[in-house]
Length: 400
Length: 139
Image (tube, each protein chain N blue to C red):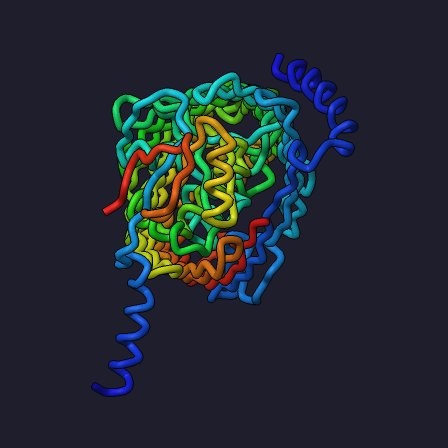
């Protein structure tokens, strides 16, 4: 259903776009952002957030252009295109939506949007909007945040005395990957809906969010083959556990305080999966920052803990060569599941050179668990890597 | 006093000068209904894109001006860098647009005079044309 809505919106959007070019300067506004980010990992035994032992500036660097066209005081259209240099990010039109704002309290957006699960998940590309070079990987690494959805977002803002209240709901179609990492777990999501509730009082902020991905479609050849093999050998129960045909829920709670001199901010996220293969994960971060004029010093602790995968290999070994192959396949696929337990401490500095340009640097001390993936990518020959490393990063953030 | 102490003193003075300036800021609006008073937290709410009882559109003076620094320090209560990053987040996620920006106090007076239901800030003591009302004065 949202796909039809989006198609209609795109057609509507296409019409005023042509006249927008001839529009006055006030009706059509261009803006944008860019970031150049470099990083290096202290070890050559693994990679983390796509960084390895040599300096790379191509993983997170990007440039984006946004066009906002005001049709009248209530309707506007916006488009945002992003060019990524990273190998696993696609460049293209990331946002394309129609905004209807009948009053200062209500806002309706329809079109191609991003999921606002976490505080910064829909602006993860706008590095200027957050203190770190790299938002805490344990919470922000899920690829779900990088992929847009096509649908509807409704926002309502009000106040109760001095308390600002925000309520937001969204619903749409989504084509993207749920979990980062191994190719074996590529799945498509067809339906996503969620809500965000926020409170602001003086410098205090509370934000709570829930998202439900109701339909996951298996996109993985490896898992399909395994499920086929298990079914034909009569292991229906085991086969059903590998079948990717259910949903997952995401719960987020965030709180913070900000003053002229310092801030504290934390977000906790829990992903509950109905799928046996994609086990849930709990993660959080806590950041403390101190401003000295235009310089910000900050420290972040972050942690993630992944639930144990509950699939038990019930295939008897040594009965027949076919069953042995099947049993080995189950073990192999099982071993590929992400087990992203990781603790980290990040110390960083942000210097706002002016109101459009900021320089950042930070170091993250990473402590994972041996034998687990811990958000590292480890080649087979380095399996005994101790999952401890430091990530050094520098960045320049620009908005225009 | 050693040279180092003197240098440190000058640097710390420069850092604190804006916050400790004795200059006061008035928050001024072009009201359509009279009279209205407004609290500091409501002004903060209006300038940070929130919803308020007084339906006023905020106008700011471009960054770099002393009057803006005093307003951000004493009324908004946030560092300039934080305000800028907040608006980047709002703008590029389609949530909100930053306030209208004017380049100096003369332009501010002109803009407020010409636009009903607008609210801005000016240095205390400035001559105000007829439709403008002072709603709040900083310490």
